[in-house]
Length: 288
Image 1: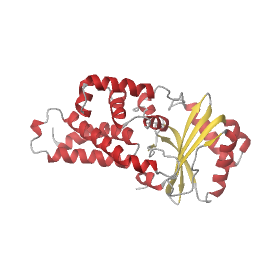
Image 2 (image 1 turned 135 degrees about the vertical axis):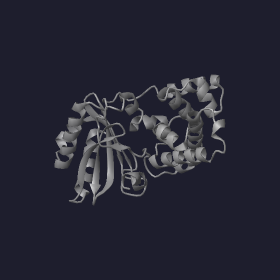
Image 3 (image 1 turned 180 degrees about the vertical axis):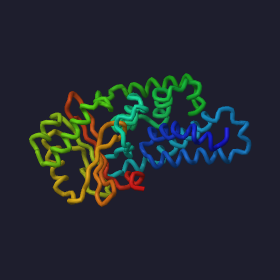
Image 4 (image 1 turned 90 degrees about the vertical axis):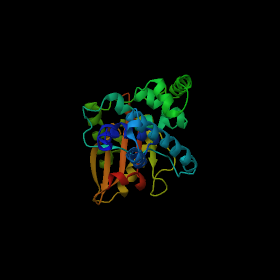
C-alpha cells in the first residue's frame, strides 16, 4: 500500500486514538503526521506485514512518550486542565455512533486522565477500537496476559461514567439553547432553575486569559458567575450552537475569532456540568 493511500485509509483512526490519548488536537495531528513520515521513509515497505498495526504502534508509543514528558507541565498548569475541544457543525451527524461520541466527550476524556499512560493506551485500544489482546500486546510491548490485567484494572477506574444525556437528543439541544438565552437575557431565576443544585462549572484559561482557577460549585454560584461573564463581553460578541466533543455545546466569537468553547453535561433533565475552554492555545486549531 502506498503512503498516500495509507494516509487516506488510516488517518481518521490514528487521529481518533491520539486525540483520546492526549486530549490535544494539535499534538494528535503532529504525532499522526510523524507516523506517516516514518512510513514514507521506510526503506522497504514490503517488510511491514501490517501497515495499520505498524502505524498504530508508532502513534500509541509516541503518545505514551508525550504524556510522560508533559507530566511535569501538567503539575504546574494554572487552573483547571480541560482537553482541547473538537467542534463540529452538525450535532446530529448520523455517521458518528453514540458510543464513539461518548468516548470523545469532555467528561470521558477527563476520566481517562486518571489512568497511567499504558493503562490509557490498553483501555482505548480494547474498549473503543476493539483490538484483541495479542495485537495490543505487540503495540505496547507487553504480554497479552499482562494487557488483559491492565485492561481490567483500567476499566475499574472508568466504571463511574457520567449518565449524561444522549448526544443527539433533540430535546437537550432545545434545552441548552433555552439555557443560553436565559444567560444572555440575564434571567438569573431561569438559569438557576435549569441547573442541578449540585452542578459544577469548569473553566480552562491556562493562565493566559481570565478564568475561574477552581471549579465553581452549586447552581447559585454558577448562575452568578455566568451572568458576570456575559456583562463583560463586548457588544460585537456572537454565539453559535455547535457540536462540541460529540455533544451539544456553543462557541462565543469576538471579532471573528473563537474565544470560548462551552460544552454541557445533562443529568435528570438538568445541566449537571459545564466545561468552558478559553485558553487561546487550545483554540488555535479552531481559528486557523
